[in-house]
Length: 81
Image 1 (cartoon, rainbow, N blue to C red):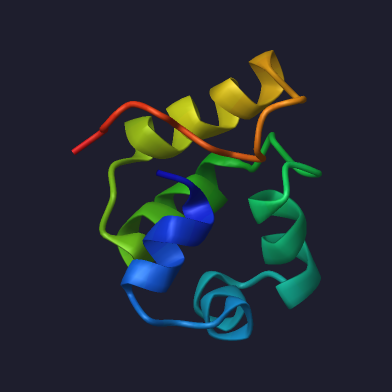
Image 2: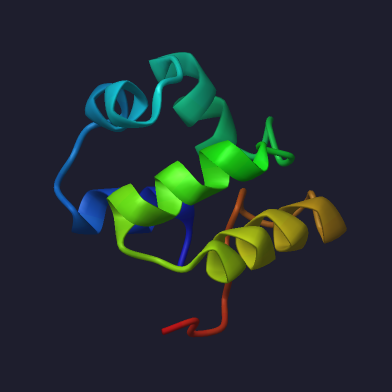
């Protein structure tokens, strides 16, 4: 699953997630699209809390995006949960 998938599962917009974690909507958009793949530990903790997913899962999603930039952004094809 991707960060976008987890966000949509929670039925929240990019703007709402951005407000909840203290970043801009553009930052969330870039994160979901693989343009930002190195979020801070603090942001990972906040995202994990808001999306009900582990920090480890978010790190694996970001690592996948860095390993294979030609693949869909921030997509983790294996089941993390």
